[in-house]
Length: 294
Image 1 (cartoon, rainbow, N blue to C red):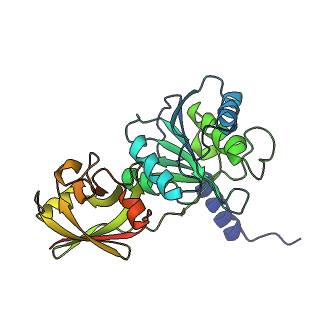
Image 2 (cartoon, rainbow, N blue to C red):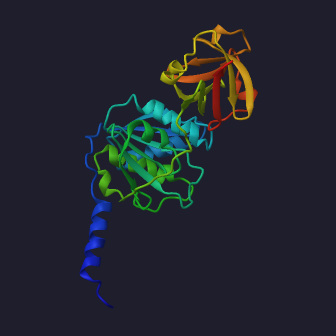
């Protein structure tokens, strides 16, 4: 067997060092593990992932965001995670599992953000909004990890990989020891909101429990467009066009009428007073939104 030339060996060594190097900074851990899934409350799945976390870290403290994400809805999971995570302190570890590709070639990843929070999830876009909001310091491929000392089940990575990996991170395990560094990860196709002349353009980020459509159009852009309470608007969601009134509350329009307003999170929201706009339009996350004064 012929030996590799010295320069080639040096290049390989440098690559390995770069891939396995620890991130520039890792926060002290709070010992808190926060869960989000689409598992629901009926089955044993949530209890099972918590049990797996306790097996590797009996001292971990576990909190829940929700386990009622719509089945397989990566958009809803990604946005809900980002909205809740910003309220937690640095050093918190989040495990998010909405994983229609479980058992396939999709990667499992762990991420450290500039906000000092850590996230464990399938590499399917679930971390899109936390990455955009918080900035990314380091991402690791943890697909080969066996935190329970056995290969993960092909159908339950939440129990066998994600939750115990998160518990290890919450206990202080360095992120840099958990897998090779990744340069890229999967993100959802979100375009930034824009003001094109007098027309606001964005994307439906989320459909809430009431059927309201939450967009990615920020309050600052709404103000820049000069919209005022009572303005009559021409709205398009996907291919559906309709009229709406710009208001401050849902009750600013009659029952059954459409209203556009800035919600408590600072986003432009489209709704029907005492009704479901999502049901009326058959709307879903990811659809384009356009709003302009008539």
